[in-house]
Image (cartoon, rainbow, N blue to C red; front, top):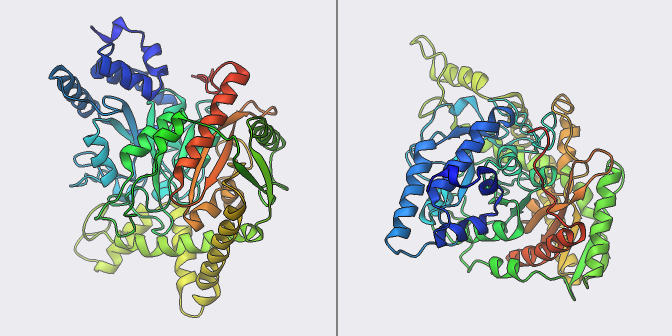
Length: 504
């Protein structure tokens, strides 16, 4: 049976769960599924630019191995043979890892990140590495050294960031699954503006080993998909304790798949935070959010108004803590051990070579954050800036703790606006940073959050995201609520919210 036998368009529109079931039953082979997605990448990625590297031969070899296992009667995992797009921040043995930066252009890691290793062990087929803001610093994927990614709903607009390549790969049907990372919203904000599902697990719930560090106390890898169930299946694959990561939680993974299969909000207390609306929020985003809240009431939820005053300080605290940690983490890129090296002509000192390499290898946003962070950590300013930001972080955590005494989950818009045009905020860092207004508090507190589609904004026909926030290690609540809301949306409008964008 060849790929031509099955309609490529049909294969790429399947959910990950459906794809895995068809592979397990023999209705499709893993090779057919992989070939269909590689054909889709060939057809549209020149326009979308979701991928930085496509591992055609490696993906087909993984797919053939899955088919061989099935032929031998071996039991296949729940996502065996399903293709995935991997954010180019996770190390992959034998495959380039650039983190969207010139300073690591062409670098081939000698080892796999724990997330990469778990994906391979689960027989998930890794199609390649996706585009991203350099070192995950950005909200639009415009800061990639390799050019921006387009939003499949409108290629002139951003797909979110920093994980815009992963979200665009999903929305353009180049992959049914993807992996992202979330430091201040970089899984959830791209999901919101592309009409997909993205989850930031509890901090420490997914190993950071082999994930190139931006801000170590905030960074968290997580699943991206087109449905809540698919995200849960992927979450279960990549989560769990890892002794190689000192911040990894040594506890069982919450029952996320079971929750996604049994979605319900009946009897749940759902919190709405008054700080997550007001000036700067697009009217259509608030309209769709308010409709989502009404829908949850119809489904049996109790809506509780919450006041979390420290949330208004979250953006300021984040943009001191994250740059401070980035200035420390990125000090390792010194041209001495790996990556780019500029000016090493035998006449310059090591310090001069390091300076020239960083000047050539880092982009403007990375330099901006390194300078800001180094200043915040400098003698005489540490307590005034970094120390104060950490105190605010404690207040935000306390606000969440008080809120979760009253409610089971919190909901909000994921991001204040829909996708904005590429280039519109490129020269206005503050306007760009405001894209993460609703997502940052969760990273500072370390709890779990999800974004899922809640319709299209009437002004521009672009996707709007609903954010669900749960306490730490209660990730299953995200999926229980998310699955219920998703099912209600599909039933109400008669079709999945995500359809192929006409521009493709």
